[in-house]
Length: 372
Image (cartoon, rainbow, N blue to C red):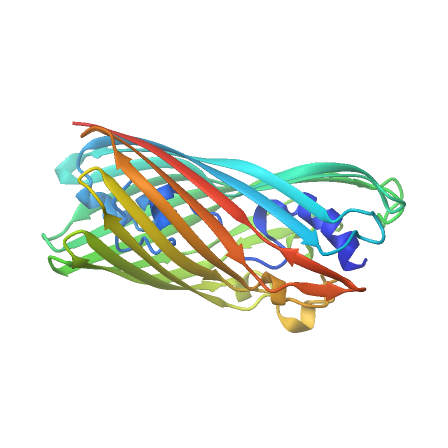
């Protein structure tokens, strides 16, 4: 299957998890997104249940938060595709976050939330002589409960537990489908993950953080024609660790950075471990308005020797770099809202005389309320 045919199939069926050459890139929160996701040492809203549960220890008011994450995911070419006559394949999705926290027994903060780490899909019909129909959806839905406590004024610990639901659906019919009658499956399974977060503030202006996520193994019903060869009978969510810091350079300006490793090599022999780098800033323009600017990387995770397993001749287009901008406004002491926008930058790939470009645009919107 050539790249142009792969784009038609994979961008529809596998878009939700970036399963062919990407790590799990969807992370909740507009404020965190504005920071370039360098949020583990900040973690001052309910998305701390993902970024660093230790940050919950400093959030003692009862609060609720809802967030939406919009993904626009086009693959474009510099000329019409010779097979389908199209110069753009695109899909989009809206994925949610909702959370709640309150002070609990012995000044412990308890929080719970539901969010998506990957989600989306789509449907395309009449794709020339090769496909009559392609329809698919994949998602990782996370159900979280977390506890956090200040051990001293400068040090806090947080623990989290995730139930991760993997869902995978694919319908593919047409000449290019490898089995008679086409592919038609719908499967779902659960895995479980533990998280630990530490936050240490040695001086007033500096916060440091460490986060460890155990990863998860999900046994799914065997599907020999899975849209991802690594997902035929199991899905493994990677073990990750992250170090981060945030420093107030000025009274109204904070700089944050983080480095993390995703142990994707133990999820599939086709993948190698990847490091991600994140930097972000916050400028508090007024007492109510904060502005954000950030950057983060998301490298390709497929080993070079397996690129032909995925029918990919060049993996450079999956080495993503993201630029983010955002703003947050405090309407009242209880109510605030935030917005961030993210755009990816990647290397184009030329195949059969057609140059393809693989981009991602993200938008995050937060609304939160504290019961003072």
